[in-house]
Image (cartoon, rainbow, N blue to C red; front, side):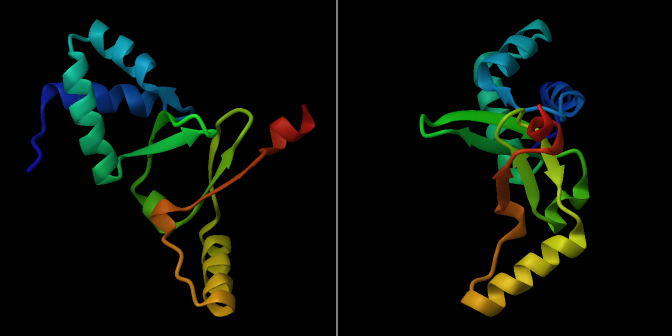
Length: 130
């Protein structure tokens, strides 16, 4: 059972305000300490937010460092995402394109993709130019 708490509201508001980027847990904890939310509470609430799909957890490289990013739209559940390996930007893949990829993979490999868990990694347009 999850409860709506003032601490959760503060954490979610902070994450949504930063939804354009991925955050290390140390950054989140520092920001929440300033709001009066303790470290153990942040860890517990982050677990809840990840489990509920409100926040995505990413692994950076092979070193198992986790980063977190708020999902800023309920429609995020219905398409895949693109993740820039340079700047960390999260891009929503067009629903039609996402569905097309899903259908092609299913037809070719009899493998059903879970859109909620699928990220395609690469470089965004801005990072390819730079």
